[in-house]
Length: 454
Ligand SMILES: [Zn+2]
Image 1 (cartoon, helix red, strand yellow):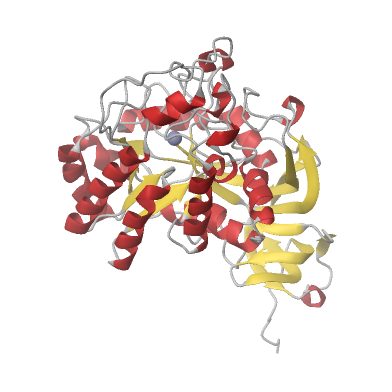
Image 2 (tube, rainbow, N blue to C red; image 1 turned 90 degrees about the vertical axis):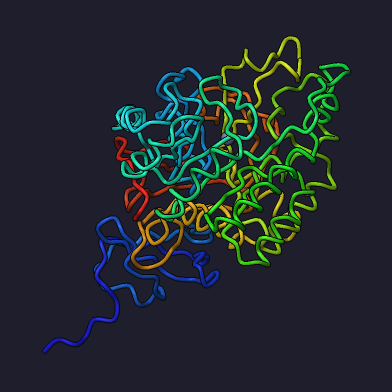
């Protein structure tokens, strides 16, 4: 007669004095078998004979999930592609990337385009990839097909997207799309800026203030007010991407108070950068909505800490450096987008550390919550039995300087260049296989193409 086995057999165990679990940080061993975590146990409970790797003081984090990445392949692979993006992700402790429906070409607004994107991604991923579809005028009939094909939800713009083949929608399209999504339990992601003033900004286009004034907080507030109204009326899941204006936060609070399915994310650049620090002509800081003032940054941190904002994701949106107008330094003409996929974890950690915020909060905002948004809860974003063994060994006290030589993005331009950041990713595991260690990649790409769960 055999006794009931308390501790499951494992292929190997990772031992750390600091394992970040949903219940908090603990010392212990993470047991991995067949790509999955099968248990988190005390070090002395590891079954005899199990191969053990002792990570010592390195913190063991869940692999981060970045639900806002513009990979741009196919069609704009010279901007970024699945090879370079997923290398950057693995090096940055991100084990799941959810790709945006633009700026690839074709944009992911039809089933056919999603299949082409999956084909393009196949075999290239150093990490797992999932996909958002897009809502544009006239593609309502495609929404169901996109979801059938595994899209995690759909994204829409309320203002010009920067790409002519991904036009903005109005209230009518949102009203038509939301019931379709609600029935399937999938979110509508919205770029929430609604122009309230058509007058072109005057002033020196090399000055950051000129750009900042051209996209005021009222644009975000107006857009979020519209989304709140629709969410209240239609009870459909709505997600505000890259919220920058703290002035819109009270509307999210209102939604929370009413128990509406409205969620919101913010990004590393809004939490770490400030308008006051952007020099003339430094277009690498340009994104939309813009990086705002320090007081705004503090208010976003407060909204994260009190749970109003749900997640922090990169909005990695790179382009060839020339599109950033580096010679002219013209903020109005430059491409708006910040490259940060690989750097999101150390950028946010550096600022969090300064503010006395712990790593378990980061794991919530940057792993668990984005996984939930993308329909990957139960598989991704937690160190817990049954989850994929996506794991990151992280040295929170080590520092490094962001140099072009360490950046795996296709293009090295980023506002973080030259910054000293806290937190070094030592090793990354994807479904139990180590994919990154000590600055190098291991094995051949085995990233999977994921579908959102039903
Ligand atoms: Zn974006």
